[in-house]
Image (tube, rainbow, N blue to C red; front, top):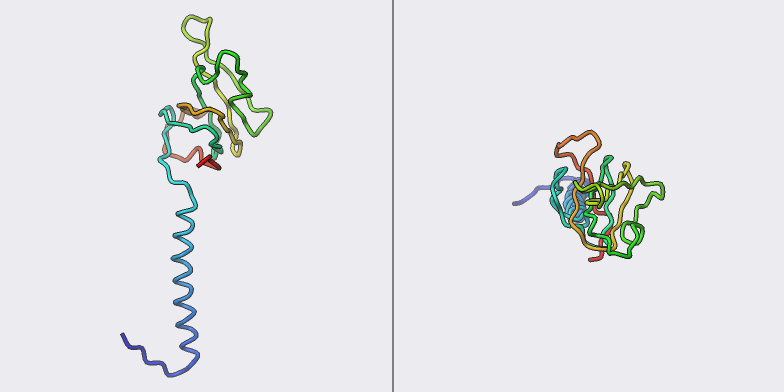
Length: 143
């Protein structure tokens, strides 16, 4: 392809347009590669939460963890580390009414949660919505 240039300022304009196009392309590639790519689970859909990974709530959610994440002598705070010290934490009883089956953590928008152990988890919305909105994002991980 041959371009005929009559005025030196046209060269500058063409050069700037090419530069802007290249920078836009590089920016899109950088943005895509710096963002962790993972499938967003739906509410009530189990997913693997690796130890040391911090998730941030983009919408209010209730994170549900199995009671078995806690060892016999471990406290909740040694495994479950919310960024908000006033995070609401509750427990679901088993059908027998004597033992627990899950731990519930209410995360407000912007709250973060880190687990010190790998676990399966689910989440649900307070209003029971099952839409495909994005509820959680990875903020940091150990990899």
